[in-house]
Length: 376
Image 1 (cartoon, rainbow, N blue to C red):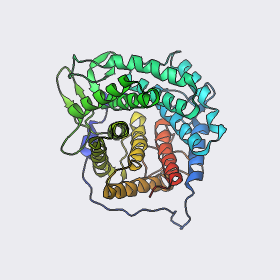
Image 2: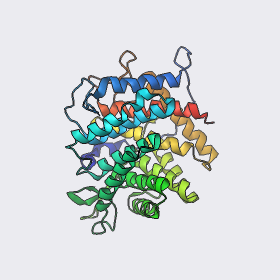
Image 3: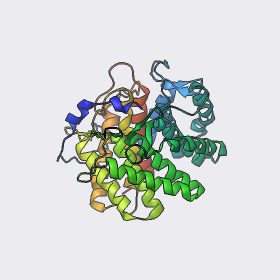
Image 4: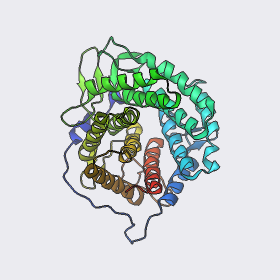
């Protein structure tokens, strides 16, 4: 991801909202939403309008792979994995091997990349493919990427942390550390190798000590290890992966401090990183930025389901989750095309991008998973 050049303007959009919204579960005409059917429709639209027979997802909805990027493909495949887990329908799993082969070919016949975070996202998707299929080739690919990713950790700059890029070892970013901690935790869960657990804790603690705003729970974007300057922009995908890492470590260790961190960070996000008029996650822009909200929602749903979460916060978190889902489905798409844009309160203007489509798809699949789990 190219987040070092992102969004100075977003800093001006951070604000507090005390608005309260009740859950809405129906269309304006009172018709109840079938979230399983909605998820089928949105995920099938993602496949129909973005899949390339070369084995990857196009960047544009018009069938063009211009602007192809490695990292959004991981999240698009995550939506397909979500659909398979929800339905156990081989319609979705039939894309797994095609994508696993195709993305490597499109990326120059390698899974490696100059961006450490891009490799992390794909490794996380490989782990999910392994968990869904138990096919060892996915786990082997995740391990191989991990071995390259961890080379990005260095103490020369900022006293640790995984670098953002291989050619910018001084730039230590939330986007290259939050997902790395999640990856290490999940590899530990699968292999029970203590080194993965050690790395998960080490990376998490570095991010918390360096980029976490202790007073509020926000996650700063990055630190320049040469100058010590910290970019204090807060983005939803950075808070999301911090929440995800904290939840994973809470599961592993049982330490309530991790759950408290996740709760505080999530609460910051849903009160400050929002469109207060609609109480939904804000529009953070097109391109890479359009994917950020869905990433937050993926890990936010994990937190909602975590035993031990404060009940008052859980109710608040669920209300916010449901409100975002209803807005995405009723306001953010044209039902004849089921294309989504970067805003979750308005349909796209012009061609849709893979980033925005995958982000909204994650929200709709998350809501269907929420309903299937019968979360109260």
